[in-house]
Length: 531
Image 1 (cartoon, rainbow, N blue to C red):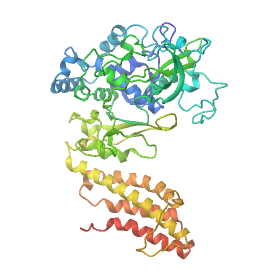
Image 2 (cartoon, helix red, strand yellow):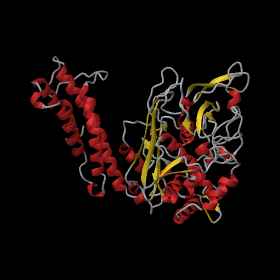
Image 3 (spheres, rainbow, N blue to C red):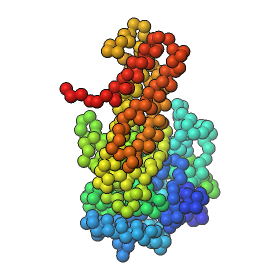
Image 4 (tube, one colour):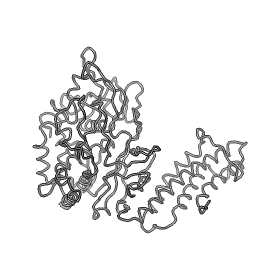
């Protein structure tokens, strides 16, 4: 239902979910939490919006999930990790959120209108001041355009059309529910660089920093029902900086000056929802059922607090520091599984903090859901994706060391084989295409990676899907301790042969090149020799 003629996200059906009986349904924030134990999946079609929404829901869960008068977000239980884990265990055993606690939060704890997408005074996750601060030199409104709000729509002269045919000259309104998705996606994954200018003082500034999750992938422990997923999504208090101060989410506090110093990054509200670098304001249609225009600009230029995101893998850079693993649409989720299972004591990768201290009783059923957005650090957006593993968290290193390391070996074998296949295909193509090249088995072949030839991409295109099937076939306890390299090499040989084409039609040079390339792959099966 609409409240006050707006679009109240507490009760408007804007979040698509899947119920336990298989039925799809759309619910508001209130319904999602009160029926979380009946929901098996979140079905938001915009993956970056889903990644942001789960952080918002986790922050609300910390406020409403409780037992014996304490909630997961209370500072008391958070002072001692074991006390907090015991509280979480009690909440999980209860199996659902108390409807009264959910109502009390939405109707009493948060000021009225804060969850209305079009509230005049304080629309959800927006800044109403933009209507007077984003203006031309003559004082006329200067909105960014609704196409700027929606990821995938073209903007400006060179905008690429990804998901529909829209133009700045004739922008199509966005249904309010979808506008809420893209608002969340922009705040978490928005671009850096030039933006709609915003005048706060005499200066009119038109640049912004990248959003906190830009070009990243997030990993969540995924339960059989959304209730478990949300409770486990609440970050442990020991994973956040202890900076003191009163914690708050944006909808719980008054608007702050864009020129003011940033508040301490408190747990859990500001950690999850307080790192935005963009400010937005949606312009509704007359009936408040759609968005016809939007303002998107900078929210702050203050130095960003450095903090570990609870849902990201960290990879070691060449300089020794760590950075979040970047989203890569060409990289399937199974290639990250070892980083989700092995302890963070590894020197090259650290698993997400949300996957630490998981309840032992739930591990056999827990999967991992990943949401990623393949982007560059500035303006270019490629493709978003989501993926879910089988229930692999039962094999975390602290729970099943043998399986964790077996899966790591499987992944290492796949990666080594993929790298060798690329090299072998490049060598093979060079030998087949260059009459001057020496095709003898021990001859060195000079490669130009700018000219890899067609075999490498064709072979890898066939190899990685086959490698995924091989990986999951090997990633079971019955295969622990078996040789893992040979199945991947066999898959690579098949992919190479398909890329090269039929031997019967090949000339002698191609046949020799193919033989040399196959030899490079088969060398992976030879025992390592000591120097």
